[in-house]
Length: 322
Ligand code: UT7
Image (cartoon, rainbow, N blue to C red):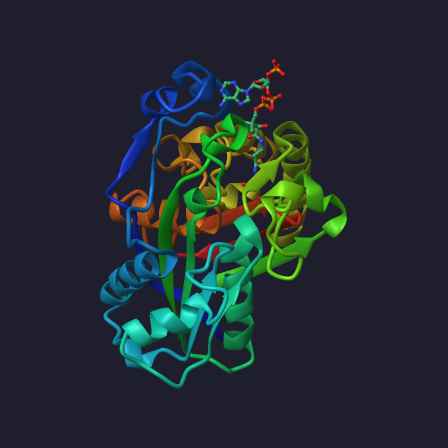
């Protein structure tokens, strides 16, 4: 059997950091509220000139270095993002050019916070059908560019960053299962009112800022982890103990704890970065993965479960042997 196996991981975080205390000086909020409701303490914010593409490139170079792979060996580049550098071309093609390569397909996937898992699922299917032997999958965002800094209900929640994995074909188990889903019924619970074809016009409520009905999204996110847990139990024939590490999307510590409970995962086996990174959307899972690998917590042979939920709604999971 052929598998796509992670050969290298990498990430990039902007240097600039905004703490909850900093936010207190910018809007009517408090460190206490943010910590209690979200678990967040600080977030990285892209500086001038720093983009989804520039952070993706650094994360990709670090992942390629760990894999011991040259960029021109890649058969595919996928970037999960809802904050691309430009409308066209895809950020993935910008990353490709900056890596100094050409020819292999390069595309962006917009599935909001589930973007990295959608990208992983997409790339994995190429491996399973023999269409790719080496691939770069990135999750990267600059969400702070589309938050309204006057809206305390969203501005405190997001951060920027990028994470990348290099996949390589292997006879050894790698990606074991992926599941991705969507339901467009709840579009307006988490969205931007303006857009390319709808147009942007702040005067008639079509701006480009993220808007979220936080509490309604919260309840949906927690409920969705029920179905993710059910799919995982089915994949494992009920042997949830086989999972060494759970890496959830980092939207809110309370959601992470609820999800871990549904999977009977003790918090010691949950990778959480929400305190340091806040919600980095599609970047949050590969960022957390890279951190845990470089800290030596996740080791070769460990079984990982990744799960995400985001705007759309979209959601999904991936189980793999690292
Ligand atoms: O990544 C994609 C998916 N995203 C998520 O999964 C995020 C899901 N939602 C959440 O994480 C939470 O719903 C939030 C953290 C956004 C909000 O927490 P909550 O416990 O659901 O609070 P709430 O929205 O019910 O608001 C409670 C109160 C409100 O005041 P009143 O109406 O009770 O007087 C808000 O106005 O907290 C107020 N509030 C704030 N207060 C201080 C909202 N934002 C802030 C703030 N600082 N930044």
